[in-house]
Every structure is written in structure tokens, then in C-alpha cells.
Length: 244
Ligand SMILES: [Zn+2]
Ligand SMILES: [Zn+2]
Image (cartoon, rainbow, N blue to C red; front, side, top):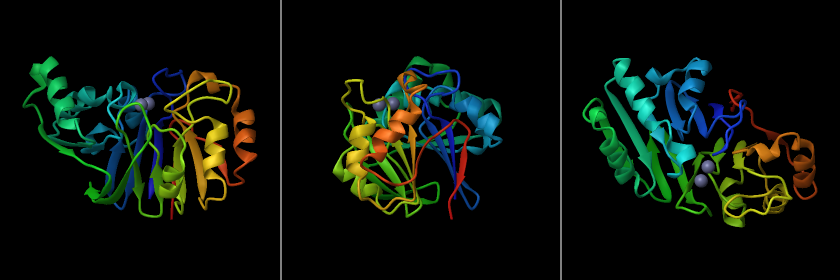
């Protein structure tokens, strides 16, 4: 399996970090998880391209995770592709309908399949996926791809999510802010380290990084390391991780 971070930023992207998007590929299957602003450009830069993404899995409906959905539809239509599947939590059908309500000319351009999922097991783009409800300001699902990859989506750090991720070769976890930012709905390094303490996880990548984290990576890693002694790194846009 190959996991490529397309966007490791947040609702306040930086020049180096675009909004949320992760590409999961295995054995000829390709899945885009979240589709924030910049995902389309990063797809082209990754060499995969929007022509090859026919399924999008959404963690939740915040703008920084869905902004490039309509642009993806239009780019695929212009490229001669005929369909797109959009899978996400409850409300995804209404979201897509509403987006197409604003851009009526995009209706019927693609054969759209929209599917809503809940916490539990399901299959998408040929991947067997487990979903787990996170703690965020709107309903959000974390996704796990067998023992290989777990993505937290947007979430506070909490024991249930750490349990869900335990045993993964790779965990990509929201770590939006450094410790001195007073935040809810997202973790701080301190809370993330506390919840990961003692867990068996191959490697953790920190993502969903606000500009507040720039220049503060060392102290954030040190904060996590006071409680969690595993391999923790910052995700970067266009980094690909191969997982056995
Ligand atoms: Zn969010
Ligand atoms: Zn977000």
C-alpha cells in the first residue's frame, strides 16, 4: 500500500501545506480521502492525476476537506471521465446536492454515485475500511485500512480513537496546533502524546497543521515524546509512505 499526503494543512493553508487530502493506493486501486483546496493540483504533482481518482472518501464536511470536490468533478468531466463516487458520513448526499444546486451546469455532467456511511465496516474502491466516530465540532469519521493505515480525520485526541488506531503500521493524526494554543475539537501535542502513550503503532505522522505550527516542530515532537516513545514525524505535502 502507498499513502501519499496531498495536503497536510488546514483551513489556513500555507504555501507549503495545502488543505486536507490523502491518496491511498494498493494493487491498482486508488482512493482519495478528503478533497480540500489544492488537492487537485497536488494530484497532478503526485503523477496520479484527477483522471485516475474515481472515488473520494470524506471524513467530514468542513470546507477544508471538501473544497475541491466541484473542481474535481469539472476536471474529470473535461478530461472525458464519466463517473465519480463520493462516500462520506451522513449528510454527504445533501452536501453534493447543494453544491450542484449552486453550480447547476455541473449537474448530469458526470455519473455520480453518492453513498453515506456510518461507523463500522464497509468497502470502498475495493478497500475494506473500518470507520470510527471522532470528537470534532461536526460529525467526522476516522478511517482504518486493515493493519496498515489509519487516518484520524479531524479530532481531539481521545482513548477511543487511539484504541481504534492501535496496531496500525501508519497512523496519520490531526495535530493542528502547538501546546500553547487553547483549542477544542483538535488535539495538542500534549493531549495526543497522552492518548498514544503505550500504544503499539508503527509510525505516526502529524497532519492538519495550522500555520501556528511552523517553526515549532521540535517542541511539538518533544511534547509528544514526554508521554509516547514511538516514531512520530511531521507529514509533508507530496510525501509518499510505502506500507508492507
Ligand atoms: Zn474539521
Ligand atoms: Zn479540517
